[in-house]
Length: 108
Image (tube, rainbow, N blue to C red; front, side):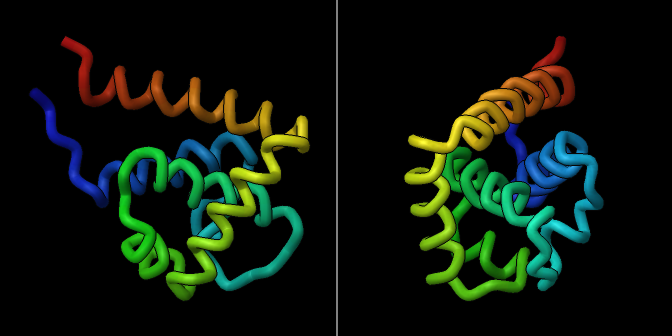
């Protein structure tokens, strides 16, 4: 059984999202409030939550308050219900992330 550290999993999620959106990982976790980092940051928070990374840990890693991160997760869950772009992005990122994780950590 392969155990992935919280740091490694966070980094895999971050780099996969950065690759998908063609932005720098540092920009996703920065304090920048540019529109181009909005969806990537929401996706990062969303995937961290569904992969079991505590929201407090995510808040520390991206220099945000815990409540801000938690509200962002709720916003992502709600937004993906009616925003086709976000829904499709999440599906595509999920596929990429699973491929990466399976190749890197679970391939024999």
